[in-house]
Length: 127
Image 1 (cartoon, rainbow, N blue to C red):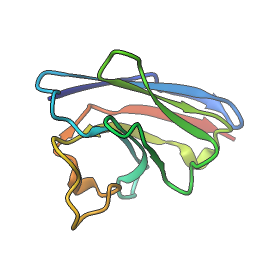
Image 2: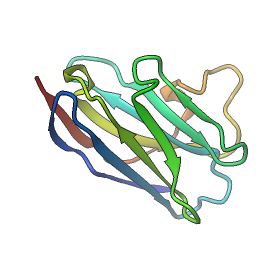
Image 3: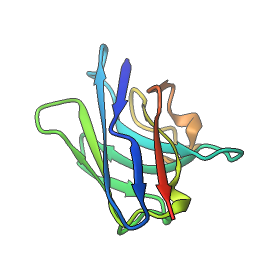
Image 4: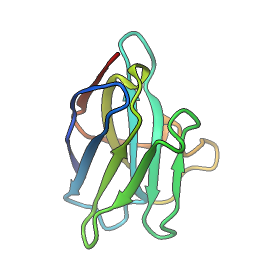
């Protein structure tokens, strides 16, 4: 499975950006697409997930109410609409996926659930 992320950039606090992630290759059994982010000196953290079969969405507490993940109709792709951006949202954003359902021993928000990762796209929010 290959993932291609795009849409990052520089925006002022309070502004909006839209990220996009498209999957290709052996995508038939993928569970969904997730977004993670990693700020300098920090661990990679979960942002949002769209699960294909249930069409369920999941968010971290830090972005809930500001970010929206949605599926691009007819495609193995998602968008992440980010509104009311804050300087603390500054990070490299990665999309990720796995085949099959998440492992019960790990949460959906664990980086260890996802063996396939995109290349990352930089989001910078200025104050």
